[in-house]
Image (cartoon, rainbow, N blue to C red):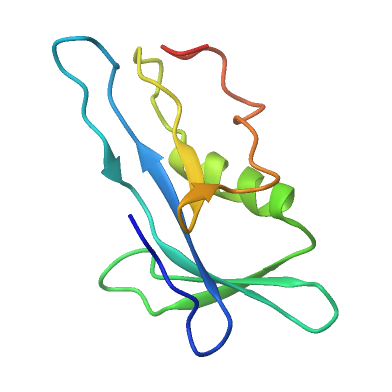
Length: 110
């Protein structure tokens, strides 16, 4: 996946989800997409569309770890099922500051 900087100097941030990774069957899909903008003071502005019937919204974060915690809290929802944890990409690389959901009890990949 290749992304380019937007006119607003923003970057796309994508959490990816996948079911149990196995030799026979591994699924990977984009679970959520947003645009990440950096303000002059270093504050991060994350623009997202949560649902088709909801308006776009912008959230502010102090750093990428705070953004990671927000996204992982929303997206890492296996509800006790044996699934791999999602991960977050910023353009074509893992997002700096990404960390697994600290509230998750277990995962298929650790």
